[in-house]
Image (cartoon, rainbow over all chains, first blue to last red; front, top):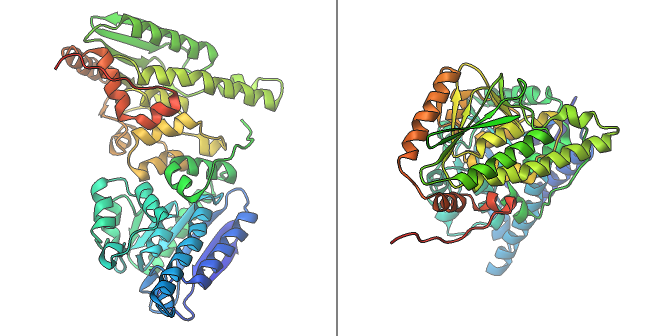
Length: 243
Length: 238
């Protein structure tokens, strides 16, 4: 599940681990994240920011992707496939919500971020990552599963170098924080879970100090990733601003 | 306003206005007519160098002119009309039948950075001047062709985010790291010297301008689409 906390203008979305140390995205967690994001969307103030963190358990995982245990618990192969498709469809709304959120977004990745968990991280504007533990990993090629269209669109939007894109998506390379910085995926790398979360909060404070107008911020963000927006069904909105 | 000088094969276009070289309607239309003159006077080996006098290369649209309108909605209309009249300037640069070099010797902000980035090469002085997209700080939308050209010319997602979504001010050295600036030079004079040196080097290739323009457009299909530019095939010799 997840919790949402508001400290002044700062929203903190925390993936908690009451039952699952790996924060796997099953229908319950997906809809819990989606409703937290909708709640944020409905009460933005100028100069807001979102920081997403994972907390509790062994601290080994930020998010380990879709909940395959839940899919495999279906009574048939086709039932399992259907469950996987259902998770992919409902998670699409989460990624779309992050891309249209009217404020800067920061993921504090202090453990493994794999598959849909990696997409969750890179759907934020900034990825802050822990150096001494955790990898970014797209296991689909190893598992023999193709990527949902919006996973591929997100990876293409956020990973600029063709070699890095190939290594992450088509080679299944596990990327540590420092390598992530070199690839341009990770904004900064830090020593511990605390250090990572602190760096995310510091960046959030700095960005909140700019008092950006949320609607303009979201529209400019969407301009940067037109292909990803079209796959997610997001269109640009015109808005009236002061000059 | 702007002036045009011909030095051998080099066309030197200089923004000569006040310190900010704000793109108000007169400067925009003067740029457009100058570029169309350059385009029709082009010969094999022509090269364009664009530079400026003053503290800024260009600080973008003239918001003072827009804000002087009678009402907020008139102000927005004025801004919109500058956005639309600058679009053919960007299109003219993207289809100019010769190599183009911006010698950025001062700040290049907003539409001023667009002007620079529509050139094939950007040389920038390192002791003064920043590249800056203030839209996020001003709460202003990004015109479609601004976004398309920026996406085309800035390939690092982190650099694109920092420039457009964070409003960072990049000096010449940072511009080089972001892959926006080709080289940094320590004064206005040495920036212009470098532009002239590379301009003369490119001029010696005697490239066919029409083919050069088509090849350039083929590199940036998305930006060309938004700018209303189409492509055609040319086979000059095989």
